[in-house]
Image 1 (tube, rainbow, N blue to C red):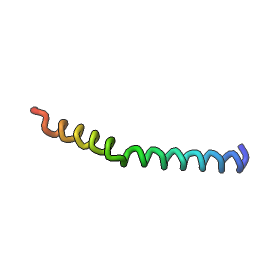
Image 2 (image 1 turned 120 degrees about the vertical axis):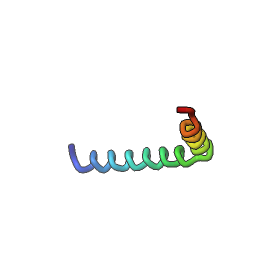
Image 3 (image 1 turned 90 degrees about the vertical axis):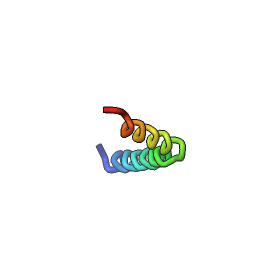
Length: 45
């Protein structure tokens, strides 16, 4: 692969990481994850 291909791949990976970060830190996903963890911790043993 050439340097240009690595550069394009790096930019694409950074863009995907930014989108995933926005999704994971959104209120909807954050509250869903919080609820999942709380349910798991409150489960009877």
